[in-house]
Image (tube, rainbow, N blue to C red):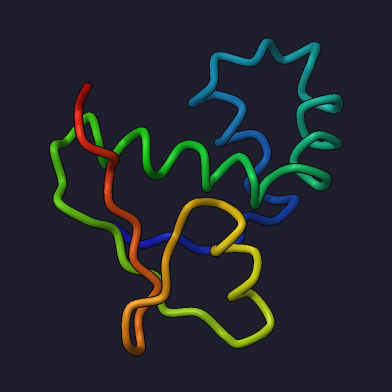
Length: 88
């Protein structure tokens, strides 16, 4: 899986994946501009759990490390690593 930063040109395709009605596309695009990074870091671990993956790695620039750490990743040597919490 390759994750890249979405741009304005991706709004329609992403809206379709989320079953956003065409009438709501502008509002969805506005929401994307404000919340896309956080939304991805909610969606990616959820997808990892659904696929029963053992971990997710991120190759990040230094400026984004804090963002990943605030969203459940841990620093692991040179990687930022997310692992699902143990099942309860």
